Length: 149
Image (cartoon, rainbow, N blue to C red):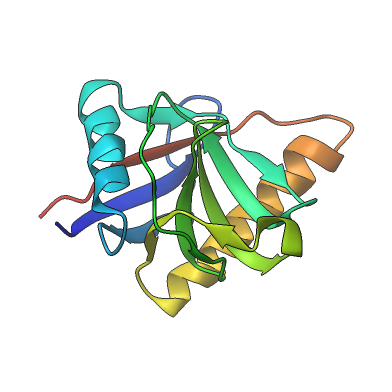
C-alpha cells in the first residue's frame, strides 16, 4: 500500500508558499499507521500549524487527529523519514540530525527524492526563523494532501 502525498507550507491567507512543496511516499513501512494517517486525510484533512522540535533532533512536526494504538515496528531515525509519534498524535518529518532520545521511531514513509529533503530543510528553517525566533512572528500552516495523479 504505497501512497504519494504532498506537504506544502501555506501563508496566512491559505495560499501555498512557492517552492515549499515536498513530495512524500507513505506505506513503505508500518502499513497500519499509513492506513490511520490516510483515514485522517480522507475524513479531516491535515492542515495545521507546524512546529519545530530541536531537542530530539531536527524535526518538523504537525499535530493531527490520527489515533493509533497498535504496536509499530521501529526504525533508527534518519533524515527524510516520516513517522507518527502516537502519544502526541504528531506526524514528524526528520530534516536533519537526530539525538539518542528519538533514535527508534515508527516510520511509515519518507521524502520522495533528495531534492525534496533540501526543500523540507528550507521549510523547517523558515518555520523556525519566522515563527519561533522572530520578534514579529508569522503564523504558517502546513497541509498534507494526496498527490494528484
